[in-house]
Length: 141
Image 1 (cartoon, one colour):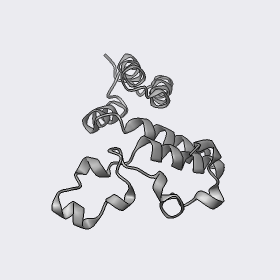
Image 2: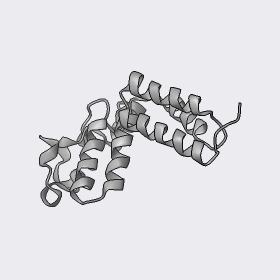
Image 3: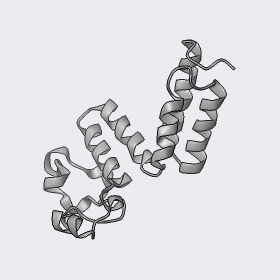
């Protein structure tokens, strides 16, 4: 399947029309996730995490539907899957006004880009660092 050839009319909603395209981060299909398997312990929490590929598919559908903001959100989300939850929470807290210096935010951006290949998120953090600087929302050292 070529993500660029998704057809919003014939392929969406993916869970109904292209179920076989959807896999969890551990490679399980939607049909493999059942209540019975969850209750028996055959399905673990990591088995139901969304995959970056599924998020990219959703983003492509949003793009074809002329929804650029939603598209960008799915792009960011697809990168975030690889980042540990604890680190995402730390970054979230660092992004709050007056919590970080410009340098702190730029270090986070470099980490996202270099360690996790999360370039969309890295650029978002860099942009935030500049906006915070303009609006005087950075921590004073």
